[in-house]
Length: 170
Image 1 (tube, rainbow, N blue to C red):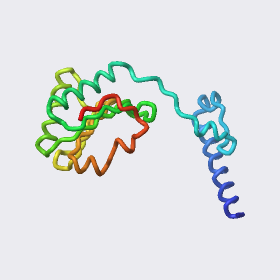
Image 2: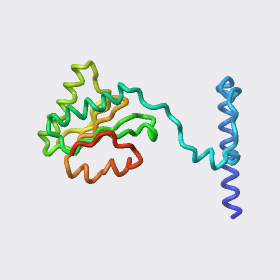
Image 3: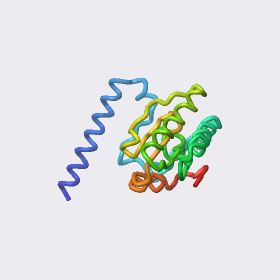
Image 4: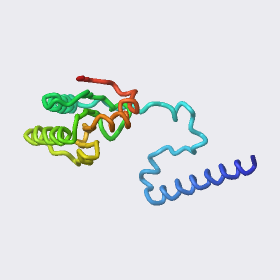
């Protein structure tokens, strides 16, 4: 037990040193903030949910547009999830399944072309149809295109089960 107390004391001391360094490097930020020690933070403050403003309507419109493009190109089990209350990196996920490598490539190209005509380019596209997972990052909306086995393996809907399902097209 004494070893554990010493370790916690060492951690507190290291944290205090870090705070002092932060104050020295950025005194304006440190003077305006009410810094408290980690052991003084209440349980309620730690477990309190982060309150975010709802995404703007045009972001939802983008998600719905992507769903429309995917369903027009026969993607299976297309889902639009609102992840905004749980994530700071995006507001929506669009998840869809293609039945083959060829269809995954066609789905990727269809989304890319449709949004390009709207003047929207992806920040990044990761993966290839032959890997079974293509990710298209449009900032506030992230598109996941899977083959059936890969989607079953990763089960993003289960990982993000607290997200609100906005649209589901089977």
